[in-house]
Structures are given as structure tokens and as C-alpha cells.
Picture 1 (cartoon, rainbow, N blue to C red):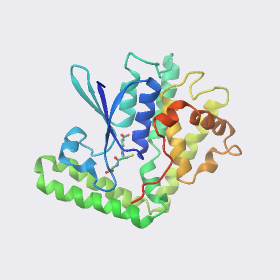
Picture 2 (tube, rainbow, N blue to C red):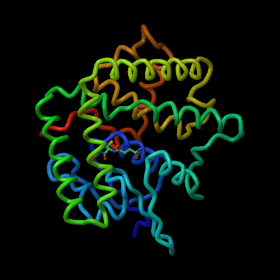
Picture 3 (cartoon, rainbow, N blue to C red):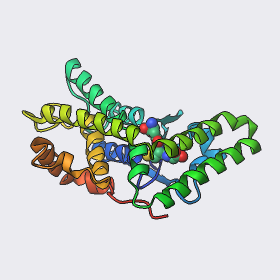
Picture 4 (cartoon, rainbow, N blue to C red):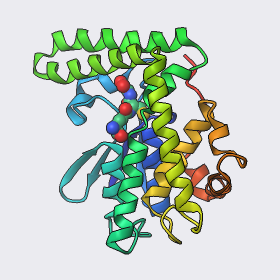
Amino acid sequence: METFTLYHNPLSVCSMKVRLALEEKGLAWADHKIDIVETQEQLEPWYIKLNPNGVVPTLSHHDGNAKVITNSADIIRYIASQDEGDSLLPSTDEERAIMEKLITLADNIDLQILSYARHPSMEKSEKVLNKRIEKSLELAKQHPDLAESYNICAQRSQKNKTFRVDPEHVGEIEKGAREALSFAEQQLAHNSFLIGEEYTLADVIWTVIFSRLELLGYGEWISEETSPALSSYYQKMQSRESFSTAQIQNQWWKK
Ligand SMILES: N[C@@H](CCC(=O)N[C@@H](CS)C(=O)NCC(=O)O)C(=O)O
């Protein structure tokens, strides 16, 4: 029986990072999908008790003691810390610091807002956000003990709604993303991977970022003309077995 259970969504970028880390590490895991679009299961009380921010992914690990880890960057660090499988961590402190910098740079790109801003149907994505706000506020009334979490969920969706139609805010996120990409391009100038010659968590996280940027229509940022090193690196990452087993799916949610 698997000791890891991943609560995730097939099309969520944060979930993809964790699936990719699990596959690269070679850990078996039980799959628990959470519908964050139609039924919005991430807001159900049982899930809020597991992940008080009401977001995917969440990893639970039953190895004698039951552990629950939230936040994709912390989850992948936890996965890397397991004894079995490949390390996924660089060998020196200096490289480890660069890996952490690359994780932070990736985390700072607000892909939620960019995704809601670039979804092919403004109307459909607006419906999802409205439903999240309504459901959070309704459940806050029904479950006063969880009201703090539900208010955080409602505020997050409200923020996504406001900023996705704010060109200045979207422009700032895009600017930050391009600066981060230029740092990654420099890293790849003389290396096979983002940190030297070994595949690490930085590669996990950035492979998923590239896939989402492509979906969002920013493929030119990682094209051969603009970023030759990133472009050939991303092709290599896509040909790894983990890219298909972890289902790094480049597609929009439908409803
Ligand atoms: N910092 C969190 C962010 C997680 C997150 O925003 N997840 C999105 C999907 S990628 C989600 O669950 N959204 C549902 C919602 O906002 O209600 C992480 O890295 O795990």
C-alpha cells in the first residue's frame, strides 16, 4: 500500500509540480483528485480541515505518524528529503541557495492571475470565481469554526477577479516573469540543468512553469529566437518519461 496520498487536480500547476517531483523521485502515491472547477471540492469542510487555505495540492504521508504537508514548494522539498530514490537536491550549499532562488522566482510569478486573465472564456472563468466566493461565504456561515479559512478563500478569489482585468497588475506579473526567465536562461548557458549537471527541484518547478506559460500564449518568451538555452532545455525536459507519467497537461479547464 502507498504511504503517500496526493490530493490534487489534473490541470493545476501547483499539483503538476508535486506529481513531477513524485515521479522523478520514483515514489508510489495514491491518487485523490479534487474538483476545483465544477463542484469546488477544495472548499468542502473535510478538505479545509486538511488544508486550511482551501487549495490543491496537499500531500499526506502515513509512515507510522500521519503527516500532512501543504504548499507545493514545501511538498516538493519534503519529497526530496525522503531517503529512497534520486536526491533531487544539489550537492553544495552554494548550489542549494541557487535552487532556492529559482524556486522563489517561480513561486513569485502569479500564475493564478495570469491564468484567469488569459483564459479563452472570460465568462466561464468569471463563473468559477463567483461560485468560489459564494460557496466560501455560505460555508463560513454554516461552519463558524472554519470561518477564518473560508474568508481567506473568498478574499483570494475576489483578488483574482479584480486583478485579472487590471492591465497594470498583469503587466507587472509579466515583467517579473521575464526577469525570472532571463535568470534561468543565464543558468542554462553552460549547464545541462538549471543547477549544473544534476536534475533538481528547480528543474521540477520550471518545467511546469514553461508548460503553463506556453498554454497562456507566452511561448515566444521561451522560443529559440528569444531564449535559445531555455528553448532546447524545455524540449529535453518534455522528452523525460516523468513529463508524461506526471501528466504535465497543457490544456484549459472546460467549464
Ligand atoms: N501556494 C500554494 C498555491 C496553491 C494554489 O493556488 N492552488 C490552486 C490551483 S494551482 C487552487 O487550488 N485554487 C483553488 C482556489 O483558489 O479556490 C501552493 O503552491 O501549493
